[in-house]
Length: 413
Length: 184
Ligand code: SF4
Ligand code: SF4
Image (cartoon, rainbow over all chains, first blue to last red):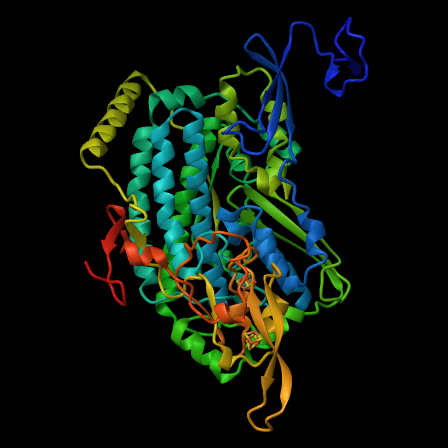
């Protein structure tokens, strides 16, 4: 491919900006997938095709860039939590938790045990909901509209539970420095157990109509193969990495909250193709359900106890304690609004539904961060399109795109 | 036991499994054709009666407010602003300026920080959120309208329902009473 030339050959008007073209290889077509394509999200993949075969692919991201890192520098610490949540609103607890934990590290505090369990509770609810969301999108990419409707309907179960727990469907703003904002309401764990049993039943339905469906298998097997070493080289993360046979999960390798005390497995598939990635997510939903069961047991066994760190909770006036006992709402102290975080640097990571997210937080002792650097899972996964698309037919593109479960707003920040 | 990795493999498929797979997929499709799992909300004929604790629209109880400005300070969207109003001090009878919050619903993201940070519980959420404003100006409250619960038109016209989690059906829609508890 040569450099940029102006105008097509023989066209001499050099002033029109629309006349800028690029020379590409002989007999190649350049096709723009997105960013307006209803399926691709706010992202574009530029592919060059030879007949029906993709020869080159360039992922082009950044359409929903919202300058989150810069914005956080002019906001007080706690105001960035609802901001970062907007990276992946259906995975809100997972994407903000590492930020909260990084700031906690700088403050030198840790959430009380009950708050840790509650964080894990919402994280896993979010994870399942995010996987189901991904399945829905994937289903519609493959033209399997049943698989679009079912997971979206079932995701509603988890969204409903999250709403009951936090007071908002998606943007929960649940973890705050030193704990969480609400305790479980009465009757919540029973509903949670019902939802777990329901989901197990539904996974069997999904298996029959989608996962073991010969049509789906034919479309996915051997498609979009990511070899183990390529996955490591590109820094792919999350279920995509594990489906390529790498045993890495932040919950296992760098456990946070109470993950190291819970009994669950990290499934690792060896095949690395789109079908393995589907199975990987199904298995991970099963493990998340297992975690939720254990969390529900723990919550049933333990009485309501403070869910904010003592540093904050010891200043709580009687009214705060009354509200907490009656409504389970941990009111915030006025100091949260003007919190000054001691000088220092902290790095924290967490496992979101799409992979590892990491936050580098630097404070210079003021009430706003000096720098917050976010490295989100989707930003790392997006790169893979460049390497695995070439060689496939155009009709495989939706299958590969969907199997990566790429989420543009999270990548663009 | 801490988390541990477990290696898994995609099971290979043969002629028979293809046959079985097709059959199962059709069978499950037929099953749900005759026994569908519907949970559609016929809005606005029905509306969801949200639980207490839902972070909906916000109302100020003025006589509880101590004008501490915490709510305006913590608001991440700069939706809550303090306005100055002249009040008469009940003890001394003197005129002075006091500050009260007002809210701009064009900006509010319903994070609930302001309600949680208020030291005297002078703010509370109403458990509904489907309110339509006809203009941007309407969505900016003044001190008067911020003290009134916004009119919930949907509740006047529709029937209240609620979704509960069910083991077999997922979400099941049940009728509830307009006020208070659940009704099957
Ligand atoms: S709910 Fe959040 S955004 Fe809305 S006024 Fe309160 S603090 Fe501001
Ligand atoms: S936080 Fe509560 S008491 Fe303070 S100004 Fe706001 S409404 Fe009034």
